[in-house]
Amino acid sequence: MNIQVSKYHGCGNDFIIARASVLSGIDLADLARHACDRHTGIGADGFIAVAEDPLEMIYYNQDGSRAPMCGNGIRCFAAFCHDEGIMIQDAYDVQTLAGMQKVKVLQEEPFQVRIDMGMPSDALEQIGIESPIWGMPLRLFDGRTITLYSLFMGTIHTVVFVDEFAADLAEIGRQVCMHPLYAHQTNVNFVQVVDEHTMRVRTYERGCGMTLACGTGSCAAAVCASMAGFTGRSVKVHLALGELLIEWAENGHIYMTGPAEEIFEGNIK
Image (cartoon, rainbow, N blue to C red; front, side):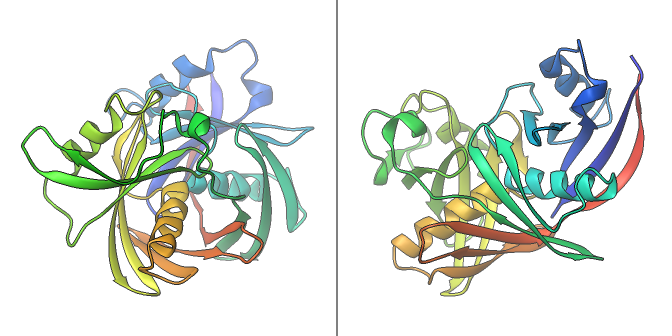
């Protein structure tokens, strides 16, 4: 096996990307686990295979599990397609397990892209829950109680509003992610509202753990904050290594604008 790959990041959320045409006959789940391992592989939060004709983003988490979509990942996907000459148009559609995503390249240097992320959903079957989880208190193992807000935004997300980021976010995130309330686990977004136009977000991602950024999580956080009356429908989301603009349009669609850049190119042996 000698596969040419690139590595990109969006606000610190990093991905290994390869054309699907060079991956024929390869178990992508195994490849993702091998390539994304930060000790014995290249190291990344996820692996993206780029299929062409039709254009499709095939996404795997660090642990080899398949995920419907990834917000930072699709911006990196778009940057890869631009750099490789796969897609030279400024606006186009990308097929994902979460449905068709609409991409619009706003500028090339530095690369900025706007993604139509579709509409949030509270459908129980999509979230993998038996009854709605909105403003629901959950008692943690150490006796603390947090309040949960869950929805589907490209993938399953739960939002927890906090006054400040606690030292044990990873442990709280793990407990919520693995809770039997969720049949398929959940991503967990800790949200600190700064003002009606600004928030800070830290995310525990299922299949990965704490990451530096989560695009779909930032969208879910913006939706929940707006619905709870904490913010308006357009917010800047400050992440550990960058920021995203999230807009909830009158047509119900969520639009995410942010950067993506290549880190290196190489080969997996």
